[in-house]
Length: 266
Ligand SMILES: [Zn+2]
Image 1 (cartoon, helix red, strand yellow):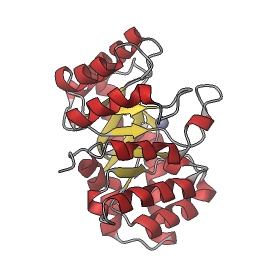
Image 2 (cartoon, rainbow, N blue to C red; image 1 turned 30 degrees about the vertical axis):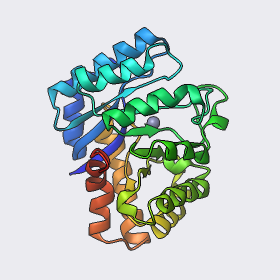
Image 3 (cartoon, rainbow, N blue to C red; image 1 turned 90 degrees about the vertical axis):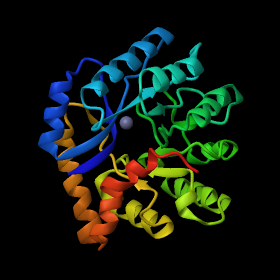
């Protein structure tokens, strides 16, 4: 069994279908993102939806709200999602806003107060129009101002994987080089096509070691069984056979690190 830190919902899936797909794919736990709400009202509905799904299997479905910081009431919605609806984290995609813009700071402050992690999209963005330029990894250096917020940059920020690793290096140096105290993680969900993966994963492991890498599939909630499984097997093969990584490293990447990510920093 493995964990998956990056699964999307559309808002119409049934919990029973999701759980069946997880069983088929050997997925023990997964982070399930709420769908994107393009209005404040739809954002709240999306929170409610993912909270309902989560409540069917709270140990296995780690529900994340999706906060669009430009929506009115974004901060209150984050609080409601975590406190009332018992979600455990937050997903954000920069849709024509830069992660370092000050209007977003109240959201980061709330995440810090609630001690919950954020998974940010980073790298080329195929939705949201011409938004890729907002998603460069070094823009997330702003999180140095919110040192108790754990966050992950998704997709190793492909194609800016070197910049992503360098950014992680900055966060490592900010805590005196102690990886176990770093607030930044890397969600290694593909982005990079298969033939880039070996190099990207090799660099990430050489530079950071295994403790801050968390694996995800970018599946849909009902395809983790099939699509997610295929990807998982390919990635295991790359790590084990091509890169010679140990079973212990793989257990961290495919399983333990996600649970660590959800724990607040001291
Ligand atoms: Zn995704």
